[in-house]
Image (cartoon, rainbow over all chains, first blue to last red; front, side, top):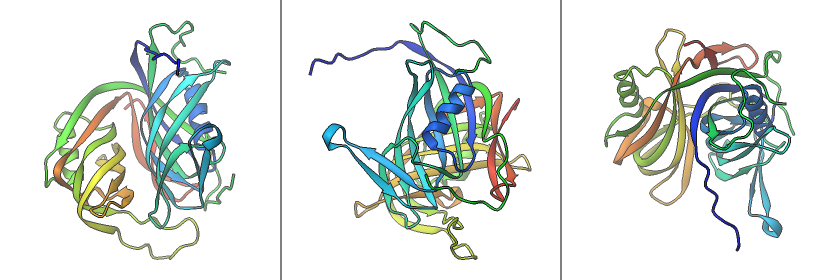
Length: 145
Length: 169
């Protein structure tokens, strides 16, 4: 391993309260909401809601897998992660957590893009992260592409 | 991606967004025996906090009540009562949102994953009045929201009372 530890200095910024309505993907919905809020970088401070079905990834490379859970009535129990701006200037979400199915069985992993439709609602709070060395800060009220 | 049909028509916008700022942040440790809902709401109201994002960080419960949702998939017409878990349950993680109901009262929504005495994972939507803090206490990180918050309103699309973000609180 020749990777170096990365250290990013910064401070917390604005808070955004969000509700995602049914039948949109959890990952893409959060990314769109962050973009519409002008957040380039953010951490997820709280999130509760439900899914129609779920797909949770684990492992990497040749050991990667996906756990699929058939709903409906899947509760999101924990949801954690961050958003980082990508090469196109759009927020990209990295989200993981635990869920419970209708029989209260628990599953965990990374939420797979495009495969976790919101069931009834997702309510969450994002907090902006402002890196000291961000070369392209967003103005108040500005939306991202 | 499988979608679900709700009783009402889809309403716009699909993403409701309210922009605000931090109203302060606290680490709160609830003592053993405390009732989650009453103790947490009282502690926050004493500091003037009416809107908050909550993270359940560590601790345990000795009694849990978990909501059993009225099924989206055609379950029983009469919703079952809450599922009750007696005995020590160690917190794995959890989250919550504190908002206001239609009468201006506190509206607390929490979810948690725990591991029970047998080592089995459990979890769900907590009934705040039915959850009692265990011998380890319960530690939460509380981020107060200022200038934005959540209000419980009837949602025509799903025909349920749901928390909705609102600016200018």
